[in-house]
Image (cartoon, rainbow over all chains, first blue to last red; front, top):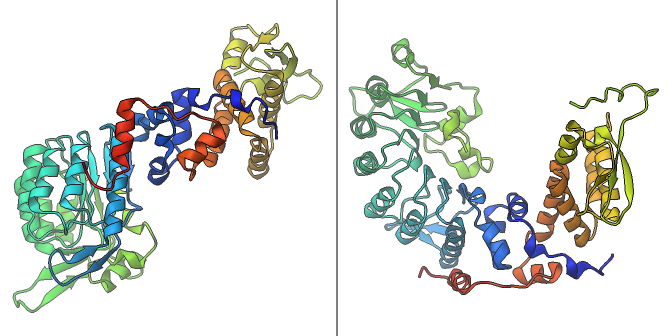
Length: 305
Length: 160
């Protein structure tokens, strides 16, 4: 190996564009592991907006155990610290360029971590939320408040959506795409109609949906273009409170209402693997049992990862 | 598209252009191979490539390799698998040479070669600590006071 002349190549003087091209293949762990600590020129390249349009932290899950008391999870201290460290470096380098922010649904962020992040991503248009157990309602609202350009959100299902949807309607004028990873009932549907009437894309895949909620959506969200209920368990409430009938196929009444949609994505098929899984998991998908990253798929393209 | 339509017929002479390195060496390259360089392509289009093209930024040693790369990649019928292997072999060089490939590919605007060399550097850098990178690439760690402060904050565990 020729070593003479090695000292004459000035790697720190490489065009920023070339350095950026080199760093474009790095994932978030590689980007934050130290190349920004090499020298001023490399740090500057690490801050290039091209590298920070998306911050994908979906490979990060908390090291946690479930506990019987609120918040129902205990996150291992070291795990928390590492998340903090990663967030600090990534958000420093991103210099506010981030437009898409992706978390894993099993990352149990604290209130403080979410606020810290939201403050540093003012241009965010799309958020895939982490787990909410450790975050207070005020924390969620504070984050939404810092994202006026928000257009798309993927979230867990929550029992009491009005506070959230109201905050979105007040602060996020361009909000149009929503994915809910969990049960969808008439209360959620009515809240959506009340606060986000102009919703364009909705995905409820692989969960439990109540028929009355589905009909409400189809009737009242006039601007809805894409609705995804693939692999869902559709439930019809019966007069007897003990009985809930699982609807086996979409009846013409519903199909008729769905005709105006640009895309009505349905899959209710006994031979479909995803449908079978949703059924055996009773509508609360245990994603950890299946292929890594399976949760990221969505038949509604704009909500897939 | 190049005006040379002779590539399919073996009896017609292939159109060549001549490149001249910084240290005076000359290299012939088929026009069709030269088209991989956007810089050379526009020179050919504007008829500026009939006399040797001077490349004052590129030494003979590197230019020879660049010509080799472009010629290989202009071959028809090469299967993707063996081309990949050839590419991997091509960038198995010491890092000063890799650096020179990058500068040459950038100057001549050869996106495939630039990509290849950058990926190679990326693989070298991934997973290394800043100290290791300093040593390998002989880079001095120089930061402004503001940057030093940022670095110090980033290395703490808590939000501050």
